[in-house]
Length: 435
Image 1 (cartoon, rainbow, N blue to C red):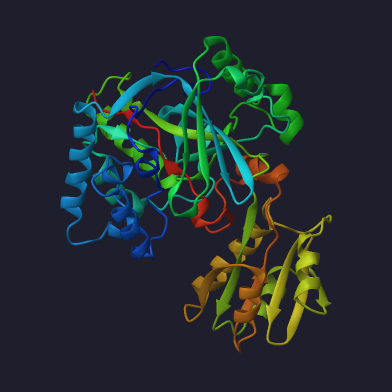
Image 2 (spheres, rainbow, N blue to C red):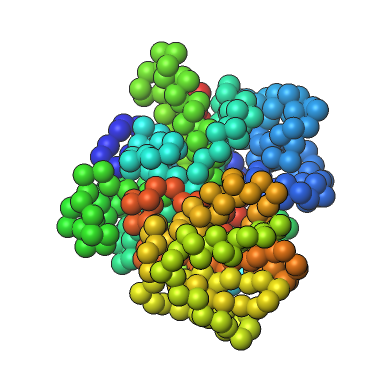
């Protein structure tokens, strides 16, 4: 593979040979069900002694287990065995992926992404950027798994902003001619997965050209009203800490003399259009406990804010979601519901404006605690308790998502959720990362 303008290359994908049961080969992302060991126990029973990506991953609920070293060694031994025993076969191709779950089909493209185009640090101006802050303390245990590994298998989803669907248009035009790579029902009720090889060189070039056109000066200005001197082409969807781990290991290798064409310079990822109908960004709300003094501080911090009483949760939720000239936040307490409109916002998104205030207030009020809550009803229930304040936030609009990251950098932690645990990516494709 060679570097190019947008950091996307055709990978040598490794997939199981004929005869391997794909329903036991594919397992869900290692960062899911971290509080449900019974899920992973069922997976282990289901897999049995069959070849499986389960043998090559470390579910994150075991990251601090007393036998973690033995688990990592077993993962790396399984990788070597699958390479030497002929379990995997190479294919030089993009893979077009359709994942059907919950009545929706997500469409993506598995590619190799140049880690030289990605920086997970705060203030990054690279082509590929984190959408939420990277917690550096989370990298070392993950680096232990990847360091010395022969194979990677991705659960990473990387988003691109393509409202017209131009990137996958060449795939749609040739869909009937694409060879099927795999077609399988996933375990534990996680839907159906179909992959097709995109092997034709002309189609591959058309795809990468369409990706490059997304950051042309004209397109970038039209979409974001920004110059494209430091363009944002890709934003992390899922798996930011996994990609950050890959970057950290590549940096280690590079600093110890690894050549620039080393396979670990690249990471296998699935690209998904931000505008794919299956992608729904759900807001994550905030609840503050021991919140005495918070409301007056809020009024002082936002003196031009307009506060309007609301009759009930449904009305407040509708008002928060409604379009308007100002950012909107719902405030819930034991005394009722209020809509807060913020004319003097400090960030592109309401969650950024609110979180900046909350971070400062929480630092000055160490007795208080914050929790991040999925769902309006759950937020309402908690916020009704004495001394507690809840904040309802709007979902991120797809039209503002990329511009927000380009202007403000990574979003505050717990800004949005993309689907439920069982919807997350399954490991299927692999790639060799050792020489």
